[in-house]
Amino acid sequence: MSNRPFPQLQAAAIDGRTRTVFYRQTQLEKLHKALVSNASEIVDAVVADSGLSRAEAQIEYSLALATVKERFAELEPKKELEREYAVARGEDAGSLRLGYGTVYIKASADHTPFYSAIAPLSAAIAAGNCVVLQIENSLRGLPTILRDTLKSALDNDTFDVAQQPVQDASFLNNCLQVVQDGSVDGPPALNQLVSRANSITAAVVDRTANFDETAKALVNARFSYNGKSPYAPDIIFVNEFSKKDFLQALLRHSVSFDEVVEREKSPTRRGGRENGIRDLVSGLQKDGSGRVIAQESNRAILDLTKRSTSLLKTKISEPVLLVHAVKSLDDAIDFINNNGSELLTAYHFGENAQCKYLSQFVASQVSYVNHIPAELLVGPAFPVGHPITSTRYPTALFTRPTPAFVNNTTQSKTVESALNGASKSEKSAAVQTLYRQALSDLPSAHKRPKQTRAGFGFFEQSMLFNLGFVLLSTGATIAATVILGKRARAYYSH
Image (tube, rainbow, N blue to C red; front, side, top):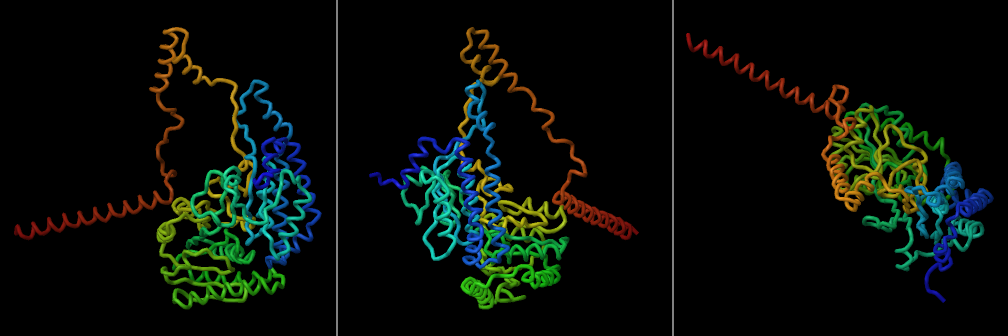
């Protein structure tokens, strides 16, 4: 008997059972049907396990099911078959991609675990992979429901559940790993899709921002889902002259937040949340690094007055808003960038010119201007090093390029003639063609146009303004010196 883990999956991956588009469609149909059939049980388990409101649990469920529908809709048998048989028709298949083979998913158990499992699972199936989903044994209700539902719905030759982390090096090296649990600290390997759960998310609020709308967006993002989303703002930087007005706006919206989102009475989850809030507040008071603006059992707003506090560099997993004053946009940029690692996300609030400046110079994986997408708060962080779109796990992430080319390009034919032409003259003519092309000018359409006033941005205009001010001051000083010198010479000449 083989000691390899999941031998049936590895055998299915080798024989290409999951590659056909009709098989993938069937698996996604079965997955969707099973999740719909168990909708009430799943939502109830999410509420009981996580202490979310029923509305939040239903949103998580709905977004997870939406990913299944989207991946199913992307499968178009006619186009898939056309790509598959392009070479047989004598056509290039440069965009051809195939599933990785086997995908191992280590989904987050701390924040929206249902969505965190279903989103990559549906994409991996749509891409034509066998899948191992890690669902560890737990006293919570969702893992059991999810395990039973998926095992009964999907083909057990191409899907399986790991009840503990897989340690087999050979298996891990030969599969695509989806890692959401923070177990990878360094740079991800080529076969890893890693979510940086511990990277900081920050917001910068300029004086030109609409404080009421900004406060509402930040309160909702921080306090929703018990404050555990990796995309909830960990720290808010606000201009020091606007801090008082902004804090008042935060207070107004934090008071009204609970009127919109009513929590289920889950004593265990509520107690854990209250302990986390108390720990943050007591740490702040102990080192004297700030003051408490507001504190309730389920939320808090803290004003950090000292930059020496570790809270400015800490990932927050509780419904606590941290606010810190900055002297200017450049002050905020310098402080953020000097922390040594790029932000997971940056939210910029203010006029577009200021936000353009911030998004250009604040180091972050993604920036959002004057809004926080509500769906962003559900699920794990986007895999690091990959494009951030409206889809957390696009199907393409679970494939690898396998292009096939039938036809030579024009350049290839010219190089072939230069190297292996039938005659010396043919070789010489081909070489001269390549040489002339190399010496020709760059395309004029791609050259930089003449700079106009409208082409200057916020940063460039600031530099020109400062330069003009310096030149004006210098000119005035020189003029004054010349005038005084003439008067002095005239005085002494008499």
